[in-house]
Amino acid sequence: MASVTFDKATRLFPKMSHPAVDALDLEIADGEFMVLVGPSGCGKSTTLRMLAGLEDVDSGTIRIGDRDVTHLPPKERDIAMVFQNYALYPHMTTADNMGFALKIAKVHKDDVRRRVAEAAGILGLDDYLGRKPKSLSGGQRQRVAMGRAIVREPQVFLMDEPLSNLDAKLRVQTRTQIASLQRRLGTTTVYVTHDQVEALTMGDRVAVMKDGVLQQVGTPREVFQRPANAFVGGFIGSPAMNLFRLPLTANGIDLGGLVLPLPRSALRAADEEGSTEVVLGVRPEQFAIVSREDSETPGLDVVVDAVEDTGAVTYLHTTAKVGTEAAEVVVRAPGRQSYDKGEELRVAVDPTAVHLFSAKTDLRLP
Ligand code: ATP
Image (cartoon, rainbow, N blue to C red):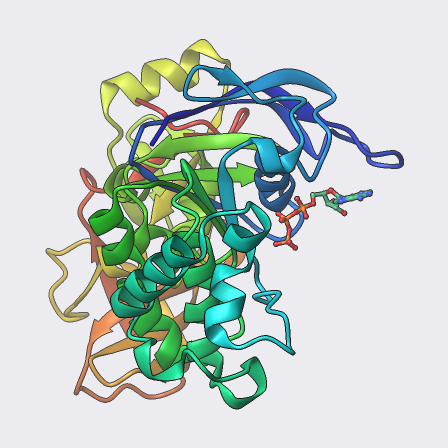
């Protein structure tokens, strides 16, 4: 097992306005499950491919443990990769697919058999060892691809969207299985996904990327509760955080009549950078529906545009007048209560729980 260290690792492609991966500094601890997440094109697959040796590193270095692997060919890196399409050999059985890399590496036949049997046991594939990929389900193929990585007993597992070909229910099951398998094996793992729920549920830590630049790295709880900037705030969490750009007033900020005082530290930071505005972030679950009759409770008046009832909770897509503009506001409401399109509601928010970002830099304000 080993740690993985990216040190200013950069990948440039022609015709791109910015590096695909821009001076990435990232340290992944021995045995850690690190998820790289971000929107399409953010550079997460390129990062993984650089670590795998499938993509050149234009500047900077990559180390696995204390070995500098920056310019080593893939087969000398002691890594095993699980691809999105599994890349199984169609003419080979499950056992042969799983053992193939070992056979090539001239591992003794008995050892190959033993390691394949062990991995098949772990993955529940014992009954499928003689089958070829076309007679396996998507989930079973996915496990064969995992098995092929496991039998190699590498220092690092690399996984590039390995669940994207599975249906929604199987994805949820399989992500739990992969996470617990990784914990059992204790092998350092770098896992790429564009799915923030997958990232939050699987990773020990999550690295959020945008436009080739690492935005934040932290535990799922840290990136969710203290997003480093407005982008991470909006990207992590579903439905997304509501973001409002609001002018600073003497009393704080005014969200459509709901005046929220700002902490002194945030006011000072905004003042220091000469901002007259801040970006307020409120997650749908941070709004509470309050009575419109009770004039004592300050609130934001919203009109329901659409009701999204998931059973346990309901998301209300609403519009509110914020300043001179109509703003879209998503509110989580308790389930099992009916709401109608066109209904007028008032929502309140705990001012100490909201997120504040600089209107100039997008960075979180203290
Ligand atoms: P996705 O989730 O869509 O796979 P990603 O975050 O994994 O996206 P990358 O595949 O790493 O993104 O691509 C990052 C950027 O580099 C993209 O803008 C992509 O178009 C560009 N890119 C990737 N590979 C090449 C290449 N071989 N030549 C030129 N540009 C490339």
